[in-house]
Image (cartoon, rainbow, N blue to C red; front, side, top):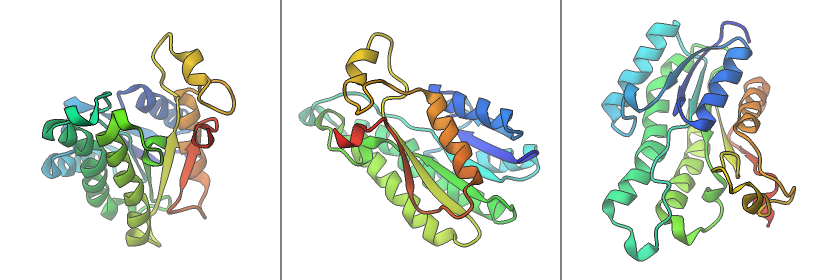
Length: 216
Protein backbone atom coordinates (compact mmCIF):
# COMPACT_ATOMS: atom_id res chain seq x y z
CA UNK A 1 0.00 0.00 0.00
CA UNK A 2 2.98 2.28 -0.40
CA UNK A 3 2.26 5.82 -1.56
CA UNK A 4 -1.43 5.52 -0.84
CA UNK A 5 -3.04 8.76 0.31
CA UNK A 6 -5.46 9.18 3.20
CA UNK A 7 -7.51 11.88 4.86
CA UNK A 8 -8.41 11.22 8.49
CA UNK A 9 -10.96 13.59 9.98
CA UNK A 10 -10.74 13.66 13.76
CA UNK A 11 -7.12 12.75 13.18
CA UNK A 12 -5.91 14.64 16.24
CA UNK A 13 -8.08 12.74 18.75
CA UNK A 14 -7.02 9.64 20.66
CA UNK A 15 -8.41 7.16 18.18
CA UNK A 16 -7.62 9.34 15.19
CA UNK A 17 -3.97 9.70 16.16
CA UNK A 18 -3.59 5.94 16.39
CA UNK A 19 -5.16 5.50 12.96
CA UNK A 20 -2.86 8.13 11.46
CA UNK A 21 0.25 6.57 13.00
CA UNK A 22 -0.66 3.11 11.79
CA UNK A 23 -1.47 4.24 8.27
CA UNK A 24 1.83 6.10 8.06
CA UNK A 25 3.62 2.95 9.25
CA UNK A 26 1.87 1.07 6.43
CA UNK A 27 3.21 3.51 3.84
CA UNK A 28 0.31 5.94 3.53
CA UNK A 29 0.77 9.66 3.24
CA UNK A 30 -1.83 11.12 5.58
CA UNK A 31 -3.48 14.44 6.24
CA UNK A 32 -4.63 14.31 9.86
CA UNK A 33 -7.38 16.89 10.21
CA UNK A 34 -8.56 18.33 13.51
CA UNK A 35 -10.95 21.12 14.42
CA UNK A 36 -8.33 23.72 13.48
CA UNK A 37 -8.49 22.44 9.90
CA UNK A 38 -12.17 23.20 9.46
CA UNK A 39 -15.61 22.37 10.79
CA UNK A 40 -16.73 19.35 8.79
CA UNK A 41 -20.32 19.83 9.96
CA UNK A 42 -20.42 22.78 7.55
CA UNK A 43 -20.62 21.49 3.96
CA UNK A 44 -18.44 24.26 2.53
CA UNK A 45 -15.67 23.62 5.05
CA UNK A 46 -15.94 19.86 4.52
CA UNK A 47 -15.43 20.39 0.78
CA UNK A 48 -12.51 22.74 1.39
CA UNK A 49 -10.83 20.19 3.63
CA UNK A 50 -11.20 17.42 1.05
CA UNK A 51 -9.84 19.61 -1.74
CA UNK A 52 -6.91 20.63 0.43
CA UNK A 53 -6.12 16.99 1.18
CA UNK A 54 -6.39 15.98 -2.47
CA UNK A 55 -4.15 18.87 -3.54
CA UNK A 56 -1.51 18.31 -0.88
CA UNK A 57 -1.42 14.53 -1.29
CA UNK A 58 -1.93 14.40 -5.04
CA UNK A 59 -5.26 12.58 -4.78
CA UNK A 60 -7.10 10.41 -2.29
CA UNK A 61 -7.30 6.65 -1.83
CA UNK A 62 -8.80 6.44 1.65
CA UNK A 63 -11.00 8.64 3.81
CA UNK A 64 -11.52 7.86 7.48
CA UNK A 65 -14.41 9.73 9.07
CA UNK A 66 -13.38 9.81 12.73
CA UNK A 67 -14.54 13.32 13.63
CA UNK A 68 -17.28 13.41 16.25
CA UNK A 69 -18.73 15.61 18.97
CA UNK A 70 -21.35 15.82 21.67
CA UNK A 71 -20.28 12.78 23.69
CA UNK A 72 -21.42 14.10 27.06
CA UNK A 73 -23.67 12.24 29.51
CA UNK A 74 -26.94 14.07 29.99
CA UNK A 75 -30.43 13.07 31.08
CA UNK A 76 -33.03 13.06 28.31
CA UNK A 77 -34.97 15.88 29.96
CA UNK A 78 -31.85 18.07 29.95
CA UNK A 79 -31.03 17.71 26.23
CA UNK A 80 -31.57 20.86 24.18
CA UNK A 81 -31.16 21.68 20.50
CA UNK A 82 -27.53 22.72 20.88
CA UNK A 83 -26.63 19.33 22.36
CA UNK A 84 -28.45 17.61 19.52
CA UNK A 85 -26.66 19.68 16.90
CA UNK A 86 -23.28 19.06 18.54
CA UNK A 87 -23.79 15.30 18.35
CA UNK A 88 -25.06 15.23 14.76
CA UNK A 89 -22.73 17.89 13.36
CA UNK A 90 -19.38 16.24 12.74
CA UNK A 91 -20.62 12.68 13.18
CA UNK A 92 -23.50 12.51 10.71
CA UNK A 93 -23.35 15.68 8.62
CA UNK A 94 -19.57 15.71 8.51
CA UNK A 95 -19.30 12.06 7.49
CA UNK A 96 -21.78 12.61 4.67
CA UNK A 97 -20.40 15.83 3.24
CA UNK A 98 -16.75 14.76 3.50
CA UNK A 99 -17.57 11.53 1.70
CA UNK A 100 -19.64 13.35 -0.91
CA UNK A 101 -16.75 15.68 -1.67
CA UNK A 102 -14.16 12.89 -1.65
CA UNK A 103 -16.08 10.50 -3.90
CA UNK A 104 -14.80 11.88 -7.24
CA UNK A 105 -11.21 11.54 -6.02
CA UNK A 106 -11.75 8.06 -4.56
CA UNK A 107 -13.29 6.84 -7.81
CA UNK A 108 -9.95 7.48 -9.51
CA UNK A 109 -8.13 5.27 -7.00
CA UNK A 110 -7.52 1.54 -7.11
CA UNK A 111 -8.22 1.41 -3.37
CA UNK A 112 -11.19 3.77 -3.17
CA UNK A 113 -12.29 3.27 0.44
CA UNK A 114 -14.26 5.21 3.04
CA UNK A 115 -14.21 4.06 6.67
CA UNK A 116 -16.76 5.40 9.13
CA UNK A 117 -15.62 5.27 12.75
CA UNK A 118 -18.97 4.44 14.26
CA UNK A 119 -19.57 3.31 17.86
CA UNK A 120 -21.37 0.44 19.56
CA UNK A 121 -23.69 3.24 20.77
CA UNK A 122 -25.23 3.07 17.29
CA UNK A 123 -26.62 -0.34 18.21
CA UNK A 124 -27.34 0.04 21.94
CA UNK A 125 -29.79 2.44 23.64
CA UNK A 126 -27.89 4.50 26.22
CA UNK A 127 -30.38 6.86 27.92
CA UNK A 128 -27.64 9.21 29.13
CA UNK A 129 -26.28 9.64 25.60
CA UNK A 130 -29.43 9.97 23.50
CA UNK A 131 -28.06 12.45 20.90
CA UNK A 132 -24.80 10.51 20.59
CA UNK A 133 -26.60 7.18 20.08
CA UNK A 134 -28.88 8.73 17.47
CA UNK A 135 -26.00 10.41 15.63
CA UNK A 136 -23.96 7.23 15.56
CA UNK A 137 -26.98 5.25 14.34
CA UNK A 138 -27.34 7.77 11.52
CA UNK A 139 -23.67 7.39 10.66
CA UNK A 140 -24.01 3.60 10.64
CA UNK A 141 -26.87 3.88 8.17
CA UNK A 142 -24.75 6.17 6.03
CA UNK A 143 -22.17 3.38 5.85
CA UNK A 144 -24.75 1.24 4.12
CA UNK A 145 -26.41 3.96 2.05
CA UNK A 146 -23.13 5.29 0.70
CA UNK A 147 -21.81 1.79 0.02
CA UNK A 148 -24.74 1.30 -2.35
CA UNK A 149 -24.52 4.79 -3.82
CA UNK A 150 -20.79 4.66 -4.58
CA UNK A 151 -20.48 1.03 -5.68
CA UNK A 152 -18.72 -0.47 -7.48
CA UNK A 153 -15.95 2.13 -7.63
CA UNK A 154 -15.73 3.00 -3.92
CA UNK A 155 -16.11 0.72 -0.92
CA UNK A 156 -17.66 2.11 2.27
CA UNK A 157 -17.24 0.27 5.56
CA UNK A 158 -17.72 1.00 9.24
CA UNK A 159 -15.84 0.22 12.42
CA UNK A 160 -17.81 0.24 15.67
CA UNK A 161 -15.45 0.48 18.63
CA UNK A 162 -16.38 -0.38 22.18
CA UNK A 163 -14.30 0.80 25.15
CA UNK A 164 -10.99 1.61 23.43
CA UNK A 165 -10.31 5.18 24.59
CA UNK A 166 -11.11 4.96 28.28
CA UNK A 167 -10.30 7.70 30.77
CA UNK A 168 -7.63 6.81 33.34
CA UNK A 169 -9.05 5.03 36.35
CA UNK A 170 -12.02 3.59 34.44
CA UNK A 171 -10.27 0.62 32.89
CA UNK A 172 -11.47 -1.99 35.40
CA UNK A 173 -15.09 -0.84 35.43
CA UNK A 174 -15.31 -0.52 31.65
CA UNK A 175 -13.50 -3.81 31.18
CA UNK A 176 -16.25 -5.58 33.11
CA UNK A 177 -18.70 -4.43 30.40
CA UNK A 178 -17.01 -6.67 27.82
CA UNK A 179 -16.96 -10.43 27.31
CA UNK A 180 -13.17 -10.38 27.30
CA UNK A 181 -13.05 -8.65 30.68
CA UNK A 182 -10.74 -5.87 29.56
CA UNK A 183 -10.70 -2.67 27.57
CA UNK A 184 -9.16 -2.28 24.16
CA UNK A 185 -7.00 0.50 22.78
CA UNK A 186 -7.06 2.94 19.87
CA UNK A 187 -4.53 0.65 18.19
CA UNK A 188 -7.23 -2.01 17.91
CA UNK A 189 -9.29 0.39 15.80
CA UNK A 190 -6.24 1.31 13.72
CA UNK A 191 -5.64 -2.38 12.99
CA UNK A 192 -9.23 -2.71 11.82
CA UNK A 193 -8.76 0.21 9.41
CA UNK A 194 -5.69 -1.47 7.93
CA UNK A 195 -7.61 -4.74 7.60
CA UNK A 196 -10.42 -3.03 5.69
CA UNK A 197 -7.92 -1.30 3.42
CA UNK A 198 -6.77 -4.73 2.30
CA UNK A 199 -10.18 -6.42 2.26
CA UNK A 200 -11.18 -5.69 -1.30
CA UNK A 201 -14.36 -7.79 -1.25
CA UNK A 202 -15.81 -6.13 1.87
CA UNK A 203 -18.20 -3.20 1.62
CA UNK A 204 -21.39 -1.94 3.22
CA UNK A 205 -20.80 -3.61 6.55
CA UNK A 206 -19.46 -2.72 9.98
CA UNK A 207 -16.60 -4.40 11.82
CA UNK A 208 -17.34 -4.37 15.55
CA UNK A 209 -14.22 -3.92 17.69
CA UNK A 210 -15.63 -4.04 21.21
CA UNK A 211 -14.36 -7.09 23.09
CA UNK A 212 -17.91 -8.44 23.02
CA UNK A 213 -19.53 -5.32 24.50
CA UNK A 214 -22.59 -5.64 22.25
CA UNK A 215 -23.34 -9.10 23.64
CA UNK A 216 -23.40 -8.13 27.31
